[in-house]
Structure formats: C-alpha cells, structure tokens
Length: 117
Image (cartoon, rainbow, N blue to C red):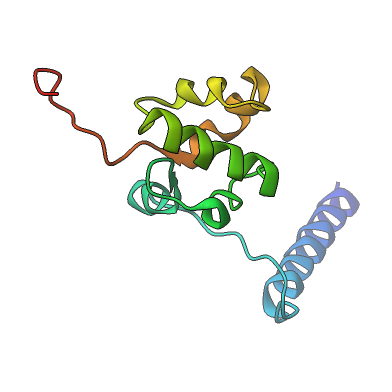
C-alpha cells in the first residue's frame, strides 16, 4: 500500500511540475494566445455587412477578394442587407458558407421601423 501511495504522490508531483513548466515559459513571439471573449467584445469583433468595404469583408472566414466584391456589388444594386440570409442571394455564397460565417456578421445601418419607408 505504501508503494501505491508513493507512486501516486510522485505522479501528482510530476504533473504539477509539468504544469508549472508549461505556464512559466514565455510564449514565442507571433504565437496565438487564446483568451476568453466577453459578449460585448464579440459583438465589436463582428463585421457589419452594410458598412464594411471589400477589404474589411475579407476579414470574414472564407471570404476572399472575389466574394467580398460580390457582396459589395449586391449591396450597391439591392440596397442594405436586412438579414444575414440575404447573403444567399450573392453569387458564390450558399447555405454552408452562410452557416460558417453567421457568427462573424452583424446587420447594421437599416431603418428598424417597418412603418417607415
């Protein structure tokens, strides 16, 4: 029984030491550091479909120069996006793409009063 307790204690100490080593070394420059994101920060990080230019739209995952230009062209021809599903009318954007980027988008700059217009 004493051998088992000693082995368990050794394993716990080894794990604690490895954890200490992992936390104490500086991170390499240019590395990605993950941290919790608060809800208000997440909202600020979203791209506004009605205000973003083509270059800003390219910050959305999977949206390159061609799709970003298509989004801007659609917006110029049809007016502001009213909902994220309107992106399905943009050539090159389908259901899978929309679902993949939905959390990165916000719709702003539209008249919220349905009685006006």
